Image (cartoon, rainbow, N blue to C red; front, side, top):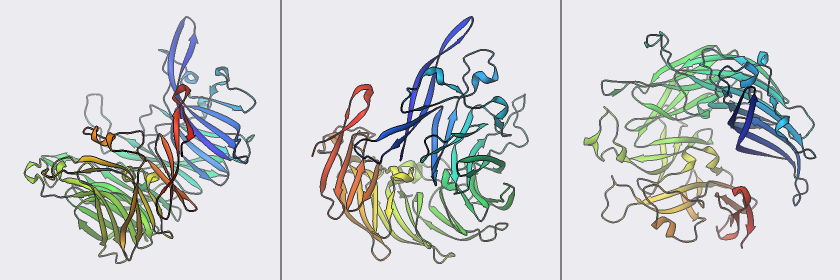
Length: 502
């Protein structure tokens, strides 16, 4: 079985005498296919949710979706049922119709989670991938989901509660921004709301959250700026199964902000940045007393941390040369933006928790070089057994005579393929690209965008597959020679259709 998710906009007509108003809405479509016949996949079921896809998780035989929806304020005095998101189902033998749309839940079944300033709806829904006739289970609350963490048993949605103001425009007493966590139990497709909790500060992404031994761990940043000084602080909290705070570690790296977090068992790893890159090793073995075990300070920072094994981490981020334009810094202790250079790959050894070290470092390109893997972990391909690391990269390089504070010229877009192990570090095996000539780079301006830019990679047996918006390419995993390419031709409705070119 296979699941396909589509996001589309649709124009709908809302009719209520004596007014007639058109309104526009966004729909997320989930399609379930039977792929047992590879040449003729069969569409079994289509489910439409009014709203925008946030994320999904497959656990066992069920896929759980999180959808954000805006209320439909087309009437000046709407009734509750008028603003509830719409929903419909259809099977392969029945074409979905507009008349099939119905409210996703009754108003009395929709929950509200204070202190979130409610403006949207969140739907958590489950769909079976083995039984196309099974009910679609749904739980709807008021709010706006921003980041999601899921274990095999529970799903956590993080929402930001911003400072509130009084009627005269003054900050309320609880003016610190907060993260509100909503917990749902997942049980073979059933979804049950369990409760909420809150902590100070905001989170970076889903890797700022984790569940371990029934406890929930979360890392946050409280932002601040006073008298030309960054007064931000960073925190680590441990909550019990009822989302009550039981452990607190606050005030980490004052004046800096979290750039990446990774939880691994009884430890947490946090990278903050202002001038150099402190990697903090945090002991979480005693949930009620989290503590800093050690830290490493090096130039640059890591946007994403990936486990190599229990005592080593892979980091991807940016190299920083703090000497560049140091006289132009406006904020105490910070670096000027031209100090941020090319993409940096690193391996950290954290076996000595009090003295973590950077074992290996690889810097790619000059200022302007970017990788989607730094902000999207799905673009990061690593296999320890195969010693394989594949990173999509847009490379900018300086020309002779240019200084390091300048933006480099774009010279390459594609995937860097490395051998990676603890004995030799990063060994570049080669580069793969979907661009057949350099013309697109010569024509690029300050930013580089292209339909043939590689975004994803995966391997099956001895073949490495890379994907862009315009091509699926197959390369030999041993020598990286190109085997075949599927070019996506645009057909009706701007849809892409693959055609075998070679």
